[in-house]
Image (cartoon, rainbow, N blue to C red):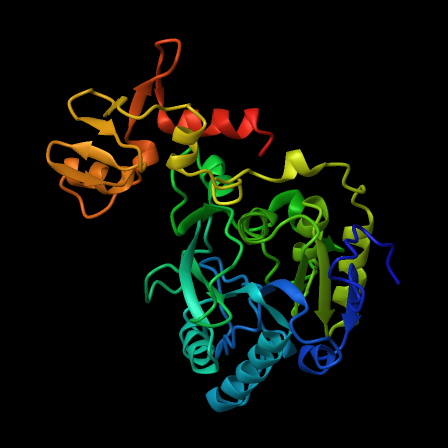
Length: 373
């Protein structure tokens, strides 16, 4: 039994949180309550089926993936395996949870089809572009420099799921994070080795899991990895103050993962250091509330940033622009000849001191002064 890394009792009382369980993931997941985990990251066998020994130009043998756990008799057997573990994961995934599955061209297209057949709804495919990929030693095809992650919610009907958009934007130098991630392979000190040899043939870099977990979970959430391997998911989850559950068949991997995670210091980070505030999570304030509380007055002029578009505030919180009336969003869209636009980002006004201020900044001032933060 491992020491508990971080436990939030709100959703973990019936789960073996911050533990690694040995066994087949399908059988283990049968013992879990339905709808009990917040996030799943799965790095399943890729079914690479290497047919011949791979040699470098100097005739040394490439240490490829030839492990027993990646051996399947045929595609039908692999498909059945995939369907079984994805079904088991879907049962334990909360109705507002999401799942990430990573794979290569050998398996990811079959996995995507099976996910859709089971009812998952794909949100994104994310391309992991390896900045230091392995060469194609035979020179018979293009160099494989990418892997694909599928990010999916539980069903098409699912309305809510965690996506920390602003955290990803901040991580990407204030630009919207795209679905191509430039991250190097796991090498150097991060690569776990024993007697000079890597202990796991497909160890993923922590930077990859950092983005996955930061983007789609919150502190205290339960992150499940049904193919735990060397424990990258657990290590990153502990650092970001999430709970993890690992399931792994191979005892040797479990020993490595436990030692890896146990040597990490307990996270002392608090909520302010781990959570990026989002406008979607702050208390809602309407334009009408600003008028009612005299932050904006009836008859006052609001204008675009360049002051070329001017509208008048009406008592019902609509704007009058020429002969057209409508919400702050509708008039902002019409003024720019766009189908829709966020009026909070478009309109400015003068506050009571005569300073030019955006109505969104006025809304934030209202939240602060009314203790709504």
